Length: 158
Image (cartoon, rainbow, N blue to C red; front, top):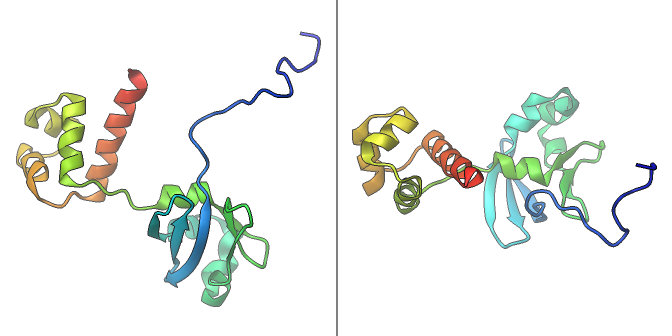
């Protein structure tokens, strides 16, 4: 290598999927925000875990009016506060609740090629719960997250 870039100026390097983009956002209550994404989805997202996790956000924790004063950055890539704090759209999207309905749960089992016993063993839960989740029992967020993780991991391995 001679120290020069090995990519042409017109080449793009892409890693992962597209970055999430916030169209608009507004405070709801207790560090929850209503977000409208650029793809039209709307979600109520609790950003408290992010705000409570870092010292940089101490002022936002202590002052609900300051918390509610955020704006969407013009590029839609973050929320910004008057004091300069930011919370990225990527992080906000990661905080969104993960839901899985019963049809998606059955599809995940089919994709994973797992029986009731196999799925129960993979998730560390009772076989009866797996049968209930396949029917109509609401699926807890922890089970939804674990199921989506198993499916994502299998897709990456394929």
